Length: 74
Image (cartoon, rainbow, N blue to C red; front, side, top):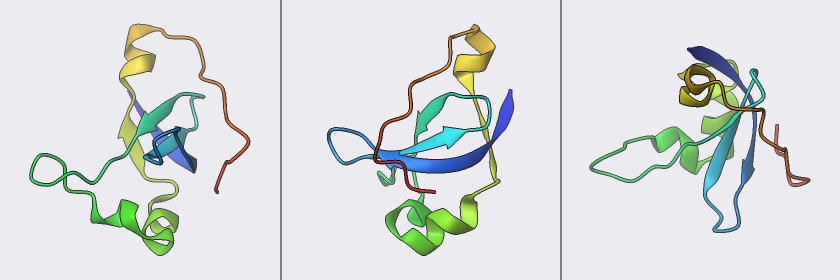
């Protein structure tokens, strides 16, 4: 199921995590050659992706909503 990115935060290892409109969080790593997400590496790139829809596997599994940390970055 696809849901829009509404904001971001970093995890304990400083990896970027997208916050989705459904209430779930999803890592959005730039780890070439397996995952190429250049937009994750800059604040401008992340801002441009707000509203972009990502597949949420947690919704497909019926998982409860994730907590949102205090270091939220919109």
